[in-house]
Length: 267
Image (tube, rainbow, N blue to C red; front, side, top):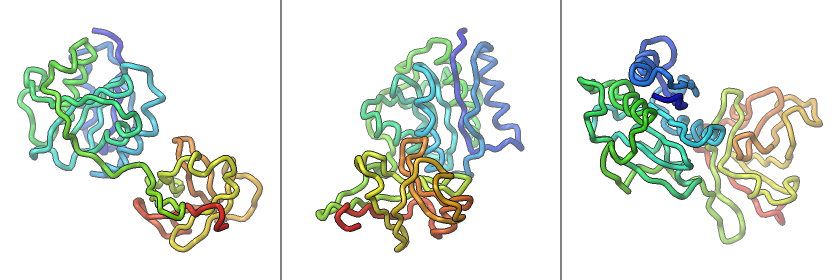
């Protein structure tokens, strides 16, 4: 037993027994494990929201952290349970794209199909792999089991859409809204590097609305509630915000909405 860090991210909420059951399974195998709740408030079955939150947080943790992520609309089906080695950390969950943005960013990873049932809790429920597969695998890893012990290495995991904006011949970048947080800020798949060394010259177009203001923080230089502007967000992406309001509501957009970053000469 050792004091490994194991994080949990799910769409289970806090009303039912699900999270507690996973923690009980982990602690039954390794009572010294440090279990960290990332969030259990991912909208039900929202794989993209889970993938973004993992992408935003994994670099905050030290090497050898074990991340268990269970947003699993395909539980009980033919979808595979997987273990991924990436960025000197370990990621456990369903093969449905949850970890693909981290893998895209890092560019180097190994994936193992979890097939060795000696590590599973018995019997395995068809509806609760978080408790019966993912939690016990995490606990075994925290006690020193090697990733290769859990099953064969595979190279055909499910991938979400690319994080990279698409470039047009005229220099326009086609991007999209990657995530909308609880404040209504629209996180795009653009990074500050896409805006160059003069972000004030950038123009974003969303739903035919031009956004030409770039700020360093939310309350900077304006008292106009609802005014739209961009800023570099804490997750490393360009965000669209509205002072004291929801940018998503002002723009009338949802996650996945396309947007354009115009060439600077068009401003």
